[in-house]
Each structure stands twice: as C-alpha cells, then as structure tokens.
Image (cartoon, rainbow, N blue to C red; front, side, top):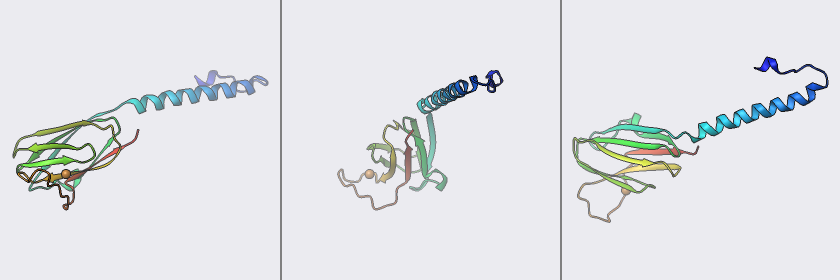
Length: 138
Ligand SMILES: [Cu+2]
C-alpha cells in the first residue's frame, strides 16, 4: 500500500506527505479508540484458607469498565467487604460465592474480612486487607 504513494515526484511531494501523515494519524486514532472501548470480562478464582489468600492472588488488577467476577471459596464462614464499591458478601465454608461488579470507579480498593457474627455497625479494620483490587483508568 505504501509503495503506491508518490513520495518523490517533485511538486507532489509537499502535498502528499501531509496527507499520508493525516491518514496515519486517523488510523492510529481508530486503533486507539477501539482498543480503549473494549472492556474485558474477567473471572478470578480466589481461595481463602484460614482467613488468608495466597500471595499471588492478593493483588487483583483490572481496567476501568471491566466486568469483574470474583469467585471465592473459604474453609470457614466469613463476610467479605469490598471497600469503595461498598459490597458485602457472606461466604459459607466450602461453597463458591461470586462477587461480581463492573469496575466503574478507578483506584485501589481493599477487601477486608468481617468476622461472622460480629455486631452490626462494628466496623474496625485493624487487620491487613485480605486482598486489594486495583482499577486502572482506560
Ligand atoms: Cu469493611
């Protein structure tokens, strides 16, 4: 395609070069636009053992507008709290529980464990987060 562009034809050269540059720019914008629009559907399987997640799963990274599914299993009952999005999920021992959301807010959001049976309203977060979700802007 590019070898059809008359780059070395005297007067034509000055007009052709900017035009082809504009084409390249237009193609780049189209490519960038379509890449930015494509949100992904991402599923993460996360296993909690004695209130802990393996180190390799402690940081979950997604992009803005991604549709995120966190599939949790735990060896003991507990309540998960995703901060920022402010979602709570009750996990039964041994069962898969799904926590799904669209990543509309960017930033760093900790997931804490709330003890099962803790008094409602009691909301201390002295422990390190179970995991952290980072949502990057597109
Ligand atoms: Cu909390």
